[in-house]
Length: 150
Image (cartoon, rainbow, N blue to C red):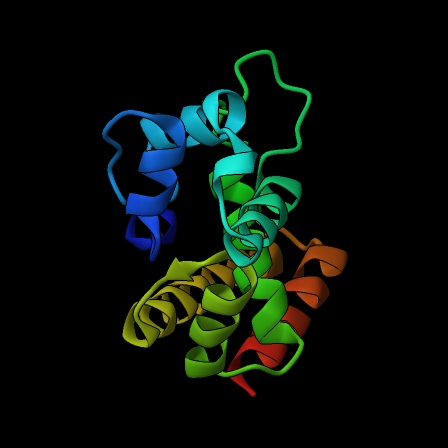
């Protein structure tokens, strides 16, 4: 999953603000819990504070009982990547955007692989929608495929 490859560039700074050792994976349970409930924002520099707040607003806002361990952050991250691609950014630009906006490092090649896998899944959904005669779903998947492949 693509969320497993996302890493905070400044994980050590976050670690110092929390007061205990953290993995650098942005969506690891320990990191999510630290950001969600133990982070002292006053100990972060302005840029990192803004990135963490953007991360929180984009990926950690759900009403699930088990938040942030509910899977919503990872799904929101996946949706964000697809939406960014559909808005015209290529895999390199997506990688740069994630670093600027959220402080997340992810290799452009990983983003490209994720987008290719997404297209394959959408093609399978489109084919099933065609077989089951579900025109709305077929049309929707065609549109998403076209936007991702352009």
